[in-house]
Length: 312
Image (cartoon, one colour):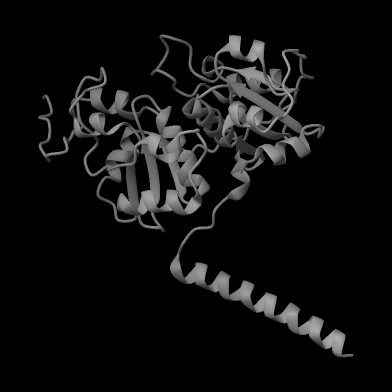
């Protein structure tokens, strides 16, 4: 009887602590971390032979042909972007084009997808994640922390053998609210509870350099969180606590809706990923500064607060 009572006491204590933690989270308004978005080499090694696993490697094709994780397929940004000369650089194409691309790579509606980079292409890898999230597959998709370098460092198997995948069958369910445009950004510049986040390097945010854009500077009221600050020297994601501190230091409230942008939507994809990982209601301005800076009717601000004059 004493043993049973002791077991019940322990169980009640555990439940009480869990309930208290949940209450603290609700009280503080701190969004929950979506831990499944980042997987470790150990997790992937344990699931490498799962029938549902779809592995996608991002990087130079020559690197993929030389070495990749067994079963991985090669994906390039051209596969998930509008054709050159049509639309903006790296702009999301139609869901039909994306469906064809991912089905060719063996992705289905029930796949457990892991995306990773071959060397150091962290932002393109995040762009693939964002694209899958847009298609409605974000909850089934993760990024391998540290990519192929981390996999190799852990002594996990690699191969040069390329096996064609079994074609997938996919029904896209585009989340059209995920991607926002200039009109949405303009309408939300001064809206309480909305944070516009600039993922570019500081020199582009301040306007010290234009980055080959029509105008130099940033979208008014945007906060700066450079994409490079989100990972360490080995391209592993910083801890959730460290990432949350970056957002807090930029003035982002825990209950804010965020929209990220950069030059062309690639670096912003990594900041989008971090925001979504931390539990924010996250969006991406796909046209980014390429679109905004070429629109003469939209204001551009430099770090000293001087706004460029809009042309009539």
